[in-house]
Length: 338
Image (cartoon, rainbow, N blue to C red; front, side, top):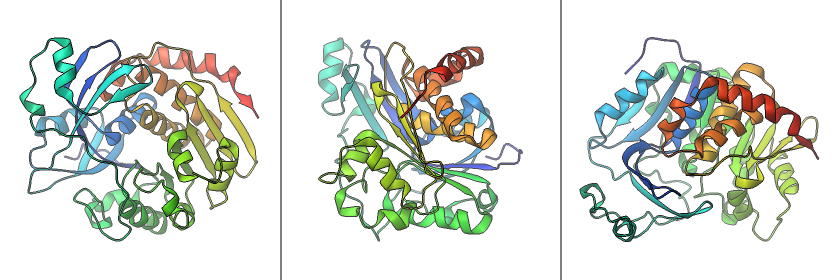
């Protein structure tokens, strides 16, 4: 579905069918989510118009794609495969900072709610290391992208598998000299991929990741946030942004060798799912307009602060632009240069 507008920004990621029981014990049942949508709606808070690319199964609701397209996104890059794919994800918060993804029957029982048919047979996906050479059903290749998407000036890669991230960014950089942002996937942010990362990340404008994923990669090497960020930058990356939940974000600017800490904007926390992805999407929107990494990180911080106040990616669609701008002005004087 092409909305008929020119696209100069590409976002590649995963879609999901989400069910969330948030920190207030409120239920969000069977809604479209996934890191692609959180990133896209974080982008949408500050700027409109991007092409989205992903893979879904034949069982993925068609009306969900139509709803995404209404918000000025070109969804022609979302490829429907000729078989069903289980994209279900379940989250039940036990407090502000922790959630479980298993045993949904227990949490529905605790709420006194009937167990939904949509979760029958659900089991959380086990974390496992990526295969360097073998694609999964959801892996993306260059020929999965619409031709016009290959001409995008900016491209953002949400957390995905090593196969996808090793193939697509080099193609975008070589065809149009695209400004590439990578949010590395959990399947390769692991010590066993240590020697693969320099080649994978080299040439990226920004690497955006979480502190937890960074610490897993650096296990046994370092726990110092700045040492880890500088090491990633030494692979040939201009900016490294690290999201750290209640501790805000850390930004390292390689050329100037500057370190910034941005405190988390004070707010009530209802649901943190997708907050880091929202930060990345808003960072992308900021940088594509200002080319200023610090300002972009501030915009990311504010977008994430709005996201955690409600459940689901589409919660961001109801955010008042005036609220975001007011928070941004309030935050800009609180940045700490380290």
